[in-house]
Length: 141
Image (tube, rainbow, N blue to C red; front, side, top):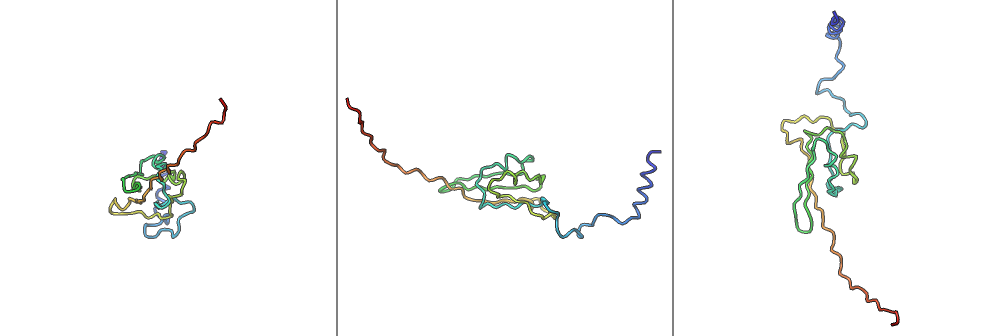
């Protein structure tokens, strides 16, 4: 007889107005601090890979190719496996990763959930060869 109260509540709720909205009728603005779709700013990234190390589902990958004068680095974020924990954003020293308030990420093709950016990381300049100063021995023999 323990299920009778739940049956009564279920029947009463059949005739109540739903408290949720159907898909096209969604709120215009997401709540404050909402973690939606990722935006990657490759111009700010230094390619340290810290975001990859803190990403639990391994949603972030890094592809490095050698180019003249440096490395071409492509960072890829797979939103299909992302848990939106924001650890990547929190650990990024250069603020190259941000979350938008975009909550509508319904796609037909999984590739539309992949965000990537490419930048060139230049090699550090070679140190200039400088002549070592000659130090004379001033001690008398």
